[in-house]
Image 1 (cartoon, one colour):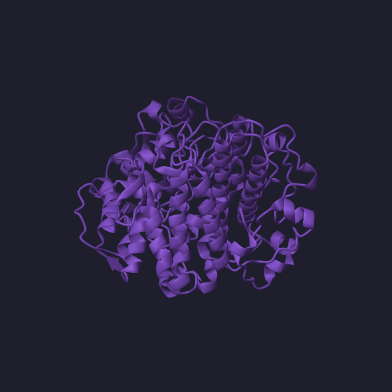
Image 2 (cartoon, rainbow, N blue to C red):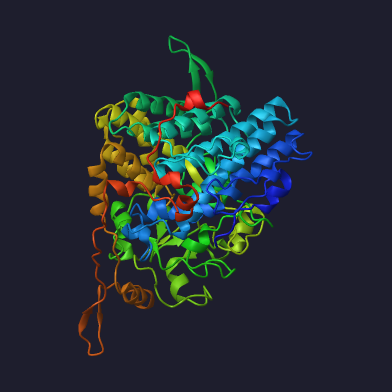
Length: 593
């Protein structure tokens, strides 16, 4: 994913949205490209115009999504990355791409919505597609405020261009930005259909995101706001139950069939998971002639040779030792003795002893050990184990082209798959409800709705688990980590916690094992060749020598300021106001939809 000017050529042909350089803070459409021609006249045209908001503008966020969400949070080891040791600065390329991508989503959503509003489609399709634009806009701002803190509000690109104010925007206080996101989602809920076609956004998608937004903003003042927590419960409950309106006596007036969790956790992340209703909001990637429409995460995260396109280089990084600890999974133990009842582990990361049945289906499944050491199974086998944490990620892997063809009927390509990337799942909404209830209860709860939600997620992961009669915040906190591991979300949990309890967030991050193992290859290879699992090897003279040991990395220098990531240098240069204090804006009095 090289840095490119975010021009989205295919979208520009359709939308008249030739984009300026990525060095533009607003990443705004050029003034002379505000022409829609004869487009936006039919329902089909408006729906097609919105389709690309599900992928292309998000493309350059993929690395930032993972590095911020997983490496910074301690879930993933990524060499000497500044995201691992908290040395991130404004010159980081992935940070720059991330910011540009998020501003692009906002700008495109604004412009497309205005075109649709003034177009000729039916009222129903206008509402649906404008609602989709608003939800994607809200999602972009949700990432922006949780990443950078105070950020400008770019409500209307056209108005700013006409007024000449596009390079003169002030940061807005993050509490006001959250209010703006809430306002945007409320309008999206008003416009979107109650239920929509497979993969498209609907009211429940917006309600689920709104529940998560309310949970996040509840502590932004430094103390928890119970009204925000109540609203998090309210909107999460609507999604979980399907009940959207009751009368004063509690009688159901409006309801619909709610989404359900997938029976098997791993099914959410397979290629077939593109059709899963549990994936409420997802980047819907497509392999096409349009670069930026595709998923490229396998290239960064997969093991060299997992596909046949020569485009994968991620085996030198992997799920952290600390995440393995969270699963109570010790790779230093012989495979047969690693007992982990949590089914999420194998769907999240793989190591020696694992076979992933839905990857390399034409070869009987992806056999981790054979992949590394057996050239008759994998022509690209290095003959050695290369990951310093002893494991590699399973999520975000589509496998080889045979897998892609079998599941979707279409071919993958170099750095390109159509595997969707979930960014809001139903299980997340369940845990939002549980966390909000715990916070309302002072750190624990025995409310039935919270227990039902928590137990549903926990039981799917560990079918033998007993029902809990009460749950604590810490239990929900850990459940979120295990449920959403390697899905780009964990750092934002720490940001949420840092709003009202920074010392707890800092203490956990400093206590993490962000370290590696040495000499795993000797142990793994011996096991492959002899079937013997041993923690020591023999040297040339037949003496025992330590085969591996756990490194100790320096404790990261984490402070309260660490939870706000710096703006890219180009943004600071383009708009000096980003270095100034944020201003307060009454968003409901200032903006309208």
